[in-house]
Image 1 (cartoon, rainbow, N blue to C red):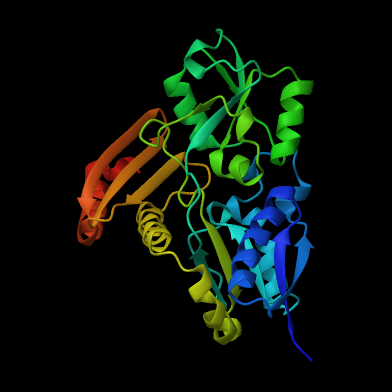
Image 2 (cartoon, rainbow, N blue to C red):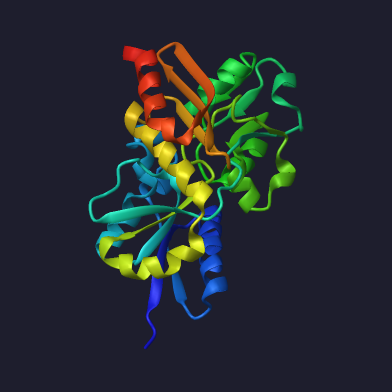
Length: 297
């Protein structure tokens, strides 16, 4: 009897869509593999009345899924990689897959008004401290307020609560086919994305590796792999927690160079760096930035 691979995911429309994207790519190459999607509700999905940083940070969106992996209830899981802590759980492996979707943050404006043209006191909603810190610098005339929930819920809240706009990830709206509601794309050197924004990842137990390596060639993308690893190095080196506004985006260029956008806010001080370096000099660059920021990080 053919084994069905059980694939865990959060239950939101976006999470399921992303899982289907990964499985579709595999099925295109090997139509004989069978999958079962297992929807799992996480703590972050249940507790939408509190900020993520008060619930324990990024892990609130994946812990239940990782427990299901370790218990053998599912064989692998598909995640938005930006939801993942940079330290992996013992016994589990996390691998970035497919082409990275657009990593930019975007403004969804109720009245299609760009950020700079919004009225004074306009209410812009986001769940991210990183986005809040950067919007406050870019548009001090607007009021940034918290919001939780999946994309559809946030759009509904914008209409129901008469909010002026939302800041969201372009990647989620693109995958859901909702690009028509985007008012403004923020360049990555203006609004630095979260590490791994736009990247999907597959997580699995170490004892599933022999199976995964047979399908990994269908999912591998060199550019995604390099960018994810560079951003992981920044996360680990800076060691910031979920309460620190931090963004990093590494764009790998074919000539072996990497464009890096970096944002960090500690207390009232905010730091931003945009630079281009050789891939082989990444570690040296990180060390230099750590020294430059000193005890401010």
